[in-house]
Image 1 (tube, rainbow, N blue to C red):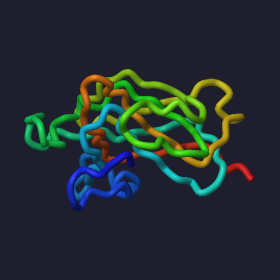
Image 2 (spheres, one colour):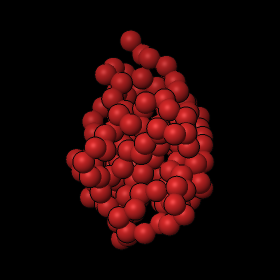
Image 3 (cartoon, rainbow, N blue to C red):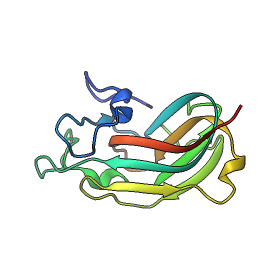
Image 4 (cartoon, one colour):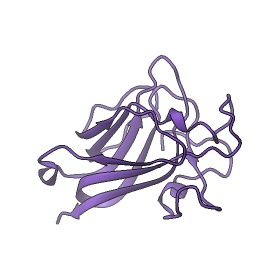
Length: 155
């Protein structure tokens, strides 16, 4: 992740396969940034045909500064990339690798967001699946419950 929001927050919480909105499902969240990102390291070359994002849920109905729950509409202006390198930080949008798809949003309460890769995804290879949100000019948190990529390993 581009950063970690507060103690106890871990990137692994976004790949723990817990059902979105279920008890014990935690967020992976960044600090407020212009271009927050989350990545899955597959440790080898893969191609990705579809990404599913489990969006934040409304636990107390209030979206305010310093609150991660109830702020599901933050998920917007999403870019999905496959790359052999990670973004340097969350200060600007990453332009490396290959852009697989975009999603405008905004997300809704506990939404399961399916983002299909563009045609020809089978020919695009990379080690890292990067989910990044463009918050340029209005820094904000990335806060998701789950991220899953579907595709194939490439030897």
